[in-house]
Image 1 (tube, one colour):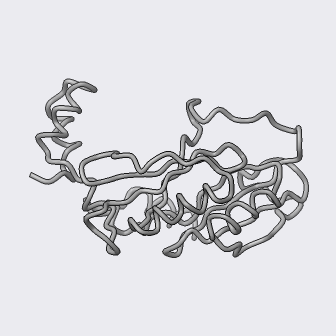
Image 2: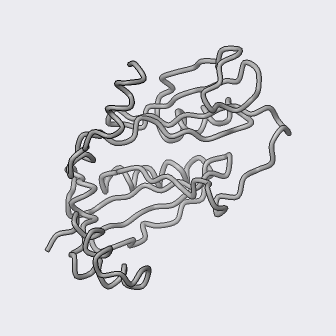
Length: 201
């Protein structure tokens, strides 16, 4: 794409439904200092197959950690999306704080009610603590657990939806409910009305 095409694309209106042109998560990336342990957990315990095992080429800089020949492995987390890890050399970086600004606090996977309970049993069978199911919002419940890197994970389910889990349909609030909460954030009514356009009446 030429510089002129990039500039034109940058100013071209995307439309109100631009978010529908995005498909969702391609991959999420975490760091580990023990790739074998990570494979054993994600493929062996959670059942997410390892689908990519590469090393970042020398001299390539696309925001990856600055270590030579760093491993970058990918797991299939279902529905054509992946979870990935970089392997940081042991001792090269401190352990992160998941509650720090700019860090990822946790990842939630979609699960049917049966899969959620089977996953809880499987985690406990392998010696991992698992909380829940806990009610997280009207019609939704989750289990919570940590991977061996200390990453907080969640498996979310809407029991009434059975085998046909629909994430957005279960999350939607009314505009009135959203207005009440948004008013605690910012007191500009015009801003609030723009913010609630995706909520149902």
